[in-house]
Image 1: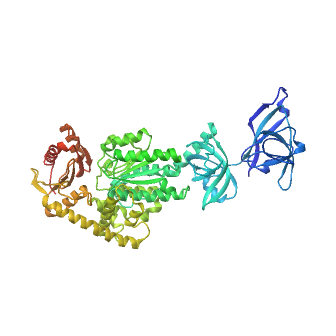
Image 2: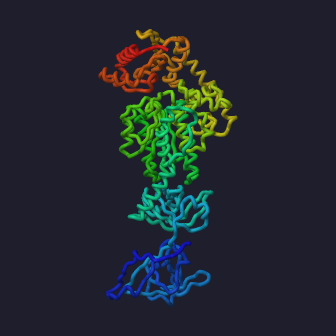
Image 3: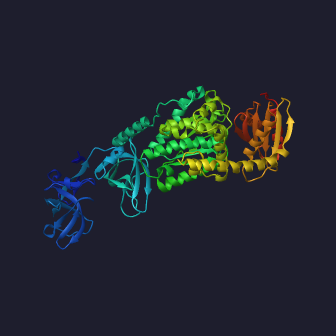
Length: 632
């Protein structure tokens, strides 16, 4: 039940002349913005504002919602429009018209009349359409349109918008800022089939009252963000040990969704990275839609971006910061949460992680590259199989799918085939790869998984830095258009294989072979001068395709393939237990002026160097490979 009451603490004494009469004898009331006709009482004196004039009297506003008429016979002094005036309510007619008379007092006490109501939760607004309510929450976004100002409000139950209008394109309540805790009173409306509050008042809650609301919201969000207790898709000791880390990352992501914090997912631009990121994308966007907000919130609150390198490059963080800071300045958005998947675990990520820390942007990582301990101080969550004794065969796509299920279990049936595709794309030989395939073998064959992975690699090459959100859904059969998926995959595979075959015809005759002292067969190919440029497959995949053919040709022997260019080398190994991240660190110390960096998995990775030191770097690399144990 909504009642109207007097706020005694807000009473103040007003002196209008030299007389110093006792103010307790005269009380004047100021109507709060949420009050309406039902809150006006006959005989009481109110502070009003002159709205306009007519031949028969003066129109006076008691607040933005209530006005009355002061007949000319009841006007005591001359007034200007918008001037303050004291009026007594003489009569409230049956039709709602209010008869007023002007009064003057040299001294009086002001007490504010406010609509007293228990704040309703945002999740309850759908049942309050057409009614005036009060809500309490935190401002998550402030967007100025050509018409009203749109405040996105978050409370413990959901997210909704409140529209406040002063005049077209003018910022309403400019004192209200991002992250303020506010009480908004207004009418619940449906706009384009979406709930929206037409704000009539906005009060910033400070002090104990504000902290009490903020603490209530924080506690509820923390509890609401806790992931559900669900089993893994498959049996795996490594994944079971990773469960606490996966739950932590899932909770951080869920909390970002519930607090309307934008999320940026950065992933390696290959099949494994795409599967990991898309699994999380499906979970997050569905959760955003369920949590309220704008109809297109899943587009401006979630962004998936591929990274060319298997680490978070300075180019990546610079792009992300540029967009985030612009959105923060122009649209009042919070700075984002960044999720790195199939990258983020190595020293190569440090420059970008440090830059993000300056802007207080939280970062979580889901990766299977060999991790460097130093990165953890810059992360709020880190899922990596090496932390619990696993290795790179448990791919990012497998990890990302399990995290996605913790974020939103409702998407499980939609994404359960992605780990098998990720494993096929990354050529995983872990036992988990087989178990994930067994989940879907009645729907997808092993060849289907390989074809879909190849299609992802092929299309991502042409997409460059674009995410191809809807196209990727068709490739992964997530869009609901099964016929389109069935037609698309053979076409993409045909195109990819034709270009791969053309590339192999150019490369294979130019492969150089030597047998190392440890018995490993080493092959080298200069992909800069012996491969087609600027087309699919790119140098990394070209080196992988060469390696696969050589492994077939030299079946039973340990094989290492190095595809190199002017300032880089890509390594692939079978049967030679290298530690590429360690090799990179050692070469960096041993070859001054080499400009060496790089990393990857233990037996798959890449190295960068300065062009003038290429031969020395390659010689040092080969010498190190010859020292490690080799044998299948």
